[in-house]
Length: 242
Length: 242
Image 1 (tube, chains in turn purple, cyan):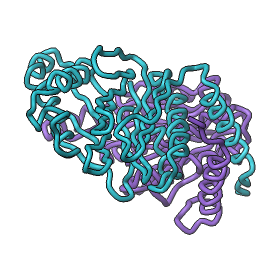
Image 2 (cartoon, helix red, strand yellow):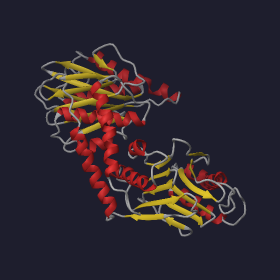
Image 3 (cartoon, rainbow over the protein chains, first blue to last red):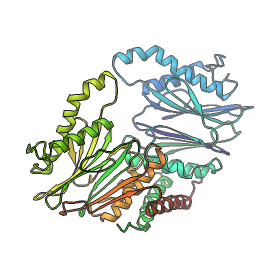
Image 4 (cartoon, rainbow over the protein chains, first blue to last red):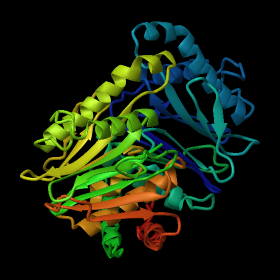
């Protein structure tokens, strides 16, 4: 299983992903389920992946092979906008399905995946998309400023309760980790090391990438204090007198 | 959609259920998704239902028709133990599938359901079961002292964090309502009025049943204070200095 979340804020984007039951690929920067394509100063794309690993790896491999082929619908270096870049990811998913889909269906293997794409192309805004298995996608706009993929439910309530577009990046990073903690506690197939990335608007590069393992002091402090405080708050609520 | 939870404690059982998109049946006590069969002083059964409504209503109707037919595998008044009573529920599910299953399959309708059964038969202990669509069941034993059916994930973290077998009944009722609140906030198809029931060990009857509607003062206080306190606790956690 997987849990990834991407949060679009006035100041930038926060991305978080777990790493359990996964492998890496060789090219471009790969932080387990977080894949980064960047040309600093010009454009920046980060992809979070969930689903069938051969499919998600295939998509990343195709996108990597397509770099510099000058097809704006496929080459991330040639995409004029984030909208076109999201199309390129959708095209990679569709190509993977065309090549492998039939065989996987014969074996009754679940061959689906979903993706979160964050990025900015010089001249355009920083944007956040969720791309579905069919290659179509939606964009975070207005109050709907975050996406989740994988095991999404346990970690959703805290995102709903605290995030707004004006939330500072560091606070959103803290929120993503609390969301990750709730998911890890309830689903054993989601687990550390986690990847946490912060992207500042108009920087066209990863501002911060932290790999958070079981011995990360900040994450352990958050987990311990959050759990303790929740129980405190709960015990302070009056019981019903029924 | 539905959310129901049943919690087994040293002092008794707490049951909670929502009511959205549902109807009632006529016989025995019916609180929307909570159905009670009781012979005060002798035996008590409460069933929570989730899934296809014609299936869950059919199961309750069969169990009602079977009362006094003296078949210990079907008649809840004749069940010598809670184990046999859980079998009776399983038999009703299986009979419904035998009668209607084929037709529903032809129409590709999802014809599945799940149940939580709590109860006590004089001479035996208070017990809590989860009964699956195939008619088989598991029992709450040891540390696994609660079950959920329907939209289970949003409301699970708080149950995991605060419940133990020694939790007092009133505190468990508060916990069930916080769990219900988290679910209602995240899934619009779960909603009030809610039913909350408390059963004390060895009383063989419903100790408390409360119907909680949108204007219930206690539930509104819990919702407001819990949400406020969560945001307070979150804002007091230090941000990362990355």
